Image (cartoon, rainbow, N blue to C red; front, side, top):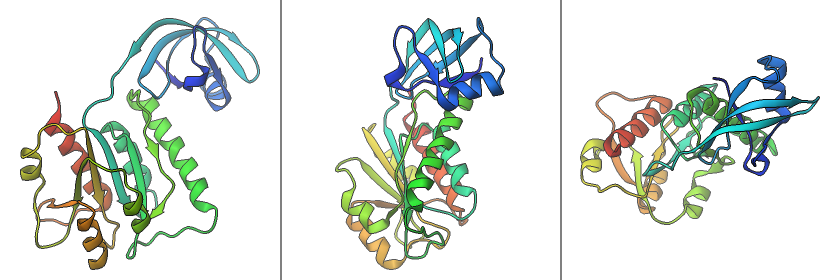
Length: 242
């Protein structure tokens, strides 16, 4: 059954489908009055609903069955050096499938991506739409948040306290990700960090380690940024699945 997003402020006994979601439902998917769809609010609520009315810019829905899905622990964050091209879109899509809760795009010394004034905000809005589309496609009811791109040092200064912090590191002193995860009880929050295509600089690694990130190796081969993110997120989910 086709899925559509209804923001929490539009959710009620008779929620309303509006804007782009209404257009997608009726102009693209050609839904009609009486059809059943699935709606979700991005905070774990999902419902089967029947289309009861259609107007130019919105539609009325009647709820049939409502379900609530709890957040999976550990909550998972990814901080990643932004790769070139469309690779970051792939990271976002797979992050949704891995149950990542928040994504922090990083601009670092050796990364190849830079932003002009005002461009970062528009990029963030585009990326958030990519996350929403991925949620609709894979059945994820918790919509992740992607942050405005930030310099690595700014991110490290403002990172929320607590949590298990892990960085995939191309340095000599690392343990395997498996060994690190095997030594943990189920944490409330895990923060994974991956460098850009040019990796982090030596000075950046020093500051990352000082901020409490434990370095891990990801095998004998050098993984692309997007592969490393998927590998690490999948390993955490596998380790702590209930």
